[in-house]
Image (tube, rainbow, N blue to C red):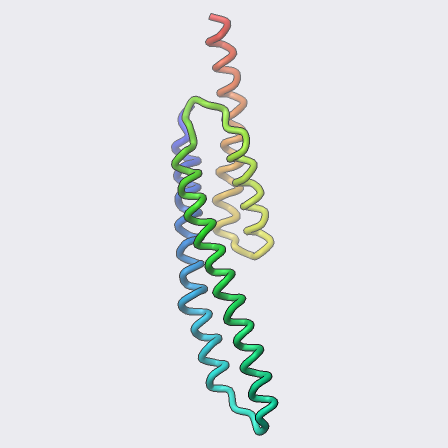
Length: 138
């Protein structure tokens, strides 16, 4: 059974994760840092508090972007290692869980790609198992 469609869906989802992670790190985090640097307050305490908040937001956005980049690279490797005539058990479950977590963080493109790949892989597992049972009987 050919798993070309699942590989392509995972590839597209992985590339999207890497791109959105890099955009989060370099565009969004830089914007947050610049906003924190250009904030003006009338007291030193308010200025330090605002810079502390913006610094924390910057670190969170960089960490979030790095998580997306790492997951994208991991999914590229997992997508490439999908076997054609073997019933995969753990990888489709991973893709479904990743699709659900992508939905929670409102990454609709990643959610659609990974949920589709996981569901298709699980559906093809049934036919692969039946083909293997048929070959054993003959």
